[in-house]
Amino acid sequence: MISLSPVADSSVLFSCGGQQCPAGQDCSSANTCYDPCQSYTSLNDSWRSTNNTDQSNLHCDQNLQWQGWYRMFLEGTSVRMPDYCVPMQRCGTHAPMWIDGTHPSIQDKVVQRGVCGSWTSGCCTFRSNPIHIKACPGNYYVRIVHLPTPAMTLVRTTHL
Image (cartoon, rainbow, N blue to C red; front, top):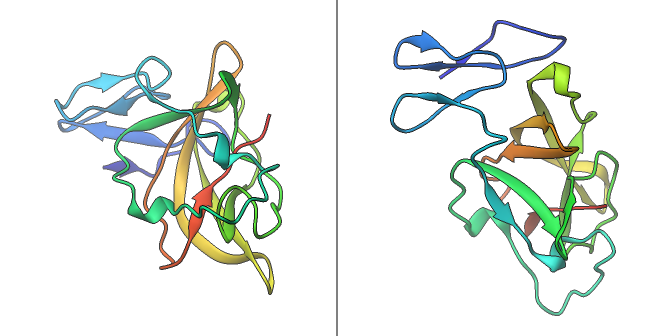
């Protein structure tokens, strides 16, 4: 459960077992607070690159069973989800998804951001469920992903 109490500018606080987790921590399935910078799943799909224009093998994140926090990599290098409009027909999908807002700083703890999908009528034709993002020491980001809402080929993208 998410508390709407702000910590920093737009920080999100999580409740766990009837208590509020410290800022920057999430609640595990065992009802204990933890730092998502220390517990995440690596996502290393080269087809997610914003440079990928190959449409011969399309992907869709709607079909994945997202659970927990993710850190994205491209060819072993930590990357982040774009915070700018990604043109359609990129990232191994028809409508690439990008963050509608800035990435957080470490002081922001966990923030919520909207997610847009580019299509023929504009950069934010589709809006997906918001995601939570945390900046981690070591200059990387983790995010918790919720399933996209539109029923079409949508993918969260990455850039260096």
